[in-house]
Image (cartoon, rainbow over all chains, first blue to last red):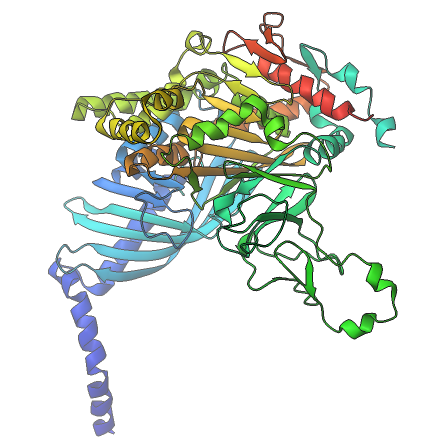
Length: 192
Length: 447
């Protein structure tokens, strides 16, 4: 019996080794894999709440100075350079969008309007060995109320997170919606 | 039946005001589909959307689901496109057997033949029947008299790569019908040293919850931008100023948004033109001829291709926006095109495209791309407020709070050059009046 257990443990060793290797950079940042997972999840939830609570300034503040928010028109896009994008915004353009919706004459903001995000299936894809940048993939559902109607959006987030002295900051957030190519009933006023 | 329900259309369209029924009445809408959309030249797409034989793109003409297909080189007669590359055909997307749509996807390649998914009737790319299963079953039936071909649009023509189809068997040719409005396509293409553009293969679709005429009237309405888009204009101006203070420079694309702060009197210095078939043009150069190295390189390339004189002519055309009635809005200096497809009196689909100039330095394309991303994407900070206005407008016109829509501004001051109407000020409501003049003509033709 004991022999069998030892055998199983031995058989598992390579996998465990791989895991240890993968977790190593996170541990170098003082985090175990479990802790990293939890902190990443909490960060994604906090970002979604900033949107749902219309704290636009806080949302923008979650990006690094060179951070980008990108929604490609379809999943096969690999870059926004020289390609159309539904959103491609650095912090300056995000600020334009924030100032627009906050302007008293943003007419489209007059009707009741709000969102509710659920973020789930959070998977840490990799941790860059050199920079410690964390690549995270997750799924989201968003219900949006506008005037008297609900719209439903769903898709995948891909975050590249950098650890700063203030916690994680977003270097790049890619958003792929399942309905990115479907006709839009009205448009998207802020980030999804 | 239809005509009994519809009041006398002449009574609904006065020279300077229009009855609300023109926007809300379902029977009038059906008559628009029949007399305007299913008779006029309607935009199908750009030739570069269907590059290879068998490539197809589905679209709508009025109520008719159509499909644009690239034929095989050397095959097919009378359709648009060159014989060398294969002609372009426009077919009703319907199998003659049991009526099933032949192309199920929005676009793609048909493979060896257009093939019906129901019983495998197969058609050549020009719609003629190639084969069907169990041919012996038709022996000694009247099937020999049955038309087994996919029905073709009555007429298909292309102008500088832009393909149009008409379901009317006769009428003016495409170029004749476009008239001076063909300048939209010249202004797009002549900015390339080889006179050609290629479509960027992405089409956004946005539903407008309003009558299609709201869209057509809005595009040349120079009074609305600084009101409707004030929030975006102000926000972009503020950030543009911050960037300039920070870096000493302001990115060109911010101007695309901050320009919405331009006051009425500046818009009023522009001119608008109205043409007999309902097409209208807003003059005024879009201010996109800065003297940076990229622009100068582009100008040098055009001068080499066309000579100095032609280059100047091509780059100084007085165009801000062209509307090709009833379904196209073209911003030629930035290679943007929007096509609308009416769905119901209060529902309109818009299809949003842009184009890449052939053999032109990349930075010039990037300017068009910024406009497409910032103004024309489904996350637009501009059309968000337009769509809201048109929706509210549609509700207002459905109400009994009043019967008329006013187009009085500057009425009586329009100039006439032959059959062209010209307003000497950009804020005149002449373009709306010109559109309704053409509308009445189309709607009452043959009545």
